[in-house]
Amino acid sequence: MVNFCAVYGCSNRSNREKDRSYFRLPAIITRPNDEKQALSKERRATWLARIRRDDLSSNPSDFVRVCSDHFISGKPSSIYDKDNPDWAPSQKLGYDCNKVKESSQERYNRAQERVEKRRRSEGAIALMELSKAAMEETMDAGVTVEELNCKACQTDITSEYFTELIQNEETLKKENAALKEQLKQNSLSQDSFEEDNDKVLFYTGLPNWTLVLCIFNFVKDLLQSKGVLSPFQKFLVTMIRLRLNLSGRDLGYRFGGISDSTVSRTFLHVVDVLYQRLKPLIIWPNRDVLRKTLPMDFRKYCPNCVVIIDCFEIFLDRPLNPLARAQTFSSYKHHNTVKYLIGITPQGTVSFISEGWGGRVSDKHLTENSGLLDHLTPGDVILADRGFDIQESVGLFCSTIKIPAFTKGKKQLSGIEVEQTRRIANVRIHVERVIGNIRKKYSILGATQPIDFVTVRNGDVTTLDKIVTICCALVNICDSVVPFE
Image (cartoon, rainbow, N blue to C red; front, side, top):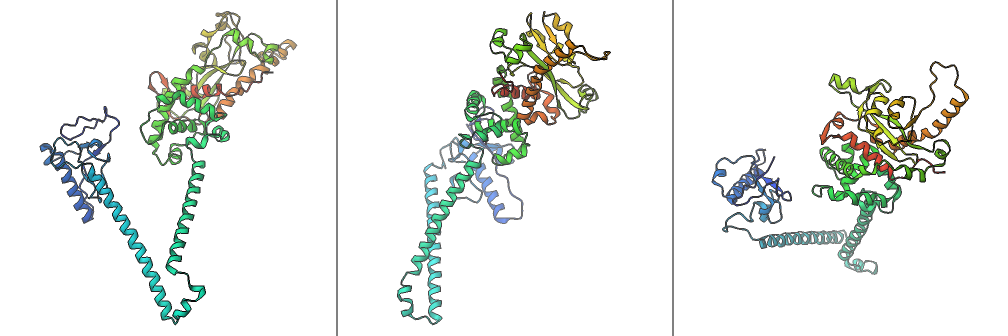
């Protein structure tokens, strides 16, 4: 809802001046507290008198707002702080009479300092009186003046007491500083991650702080700076949730007690930003580039291989719609799932990731309709499992797919088939290692996803598709699990 400032002549509104705050007209407190109830009535009357709107004097609406431009400090003071100039709006009210000047804030601050000094002075006097009373009790107990003035008792009791207080205060200050430094090291601030690669790896899955800072600098211009969290904290909340799959409440406690809804909004916003910026990291490389850096295993067994494909599934909450429930049920996992087709290069980087399909779809149908075949050029070789029986579709692009030999209807495989199957399995296993690495690095892919994540929110890409793409892109900038030698 758009908030408008009720002050005459002020045109501020929340959907346009987003850097301002808007405060509700004070309500009259009806709880059994006579002092607070009287203050609330007086304060509401003062606000209405300062605003000077005839249409608000009789029956003001609950939607009346006053923006922060009309307060010296930018916000109203506490209801009990009646002497504060910001107890009611006082600035830029559209008229000159009864305008509270900003110097009154300085006078108020000086008055508060005098009250604090007087309180400290009264405390010191009370301590001295206690010391004097203790001395008189000692005299009444039969201790003579000579005994008090002996060499062992020549120290002034009051001075010694205050000296001890000062020493205790200094000790407490040092302990407080040490605790703050320890808290800083244990917190999730930006400074605590610098030069601590173990902490970076645990919370983000990335190997070092330099890489984290590089990605953050790449996306921070699209992160909103307003709100209780800084841009780096928003980025970190998203990375931690991708990495550890912590709940919104847990993350809220870790970042200063923010609400679950704030964590959710922040996560969805940063996921949109990361998807937009990191999606280009998943790229189908040129064949010549692949051959120059081809690992030794592929040079031996499959020198023309351009991609290794496989499918993986992510668990999904059971949909209420019967049709959606049937389309997402996987007979292999015995659960509602979302299926993705992934393609990796021989070097171990993700070169293709499809959009999410219902778990019921077959590997063959998913491959033929995902757009992967459009990247093939004549002479390319694809490695896949037995479920990808797509020789005819791949042949239309003058390419070849190599899959293990089928054993159905055969008593025994021939020697050539056994050797070919062994060679294919020896290099095809890398795609499963990459999938396992992605799931291990980012635990969110191993959890059951809510239905909201597979509904289109912005554009034509679901939140889960964005999360999977981000995780694959982040794995691409880490060290490969496929050895070169």
